[in-house]
Image (cartoon, rainbow, N blue to C red):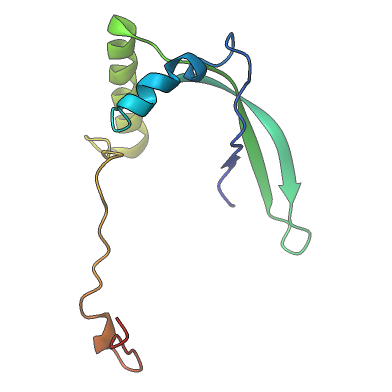
Amino acid sequence: MSKPKLSTKTPDAKERNALIEAHGGIIDMPRERRYAIVELATQNVRTDIATGEEQATLQIVHCELPTGSDRDALEKLMDKVFQKRTNLKVRPDPNAEVDTPLEGLGDGPGLDDSVI
């Protein structure tokens, strides 16, 4: 089964979208970790006729960005839920660059990396 998609559309109303008020801070500190409480609604479910595979598209219909002790509590909850789901002790850093090793790719048969 394929993974669900997330619609890029967010609510336009300030009452449903805390990102609108936080936009300036996001621009000023783009690498800061942010935590949100979101409500999702299924926008649609598509079926690939050839394979029968279904894929849901979800849309954020309400988004809140907790602050202070609420933010701290949400971060702890995120850690707890992540660890329970994955059995990993540390969540990946979204700002860490993931490097793909390219050295040696041209060493295999029929591969030519001389155009680099």
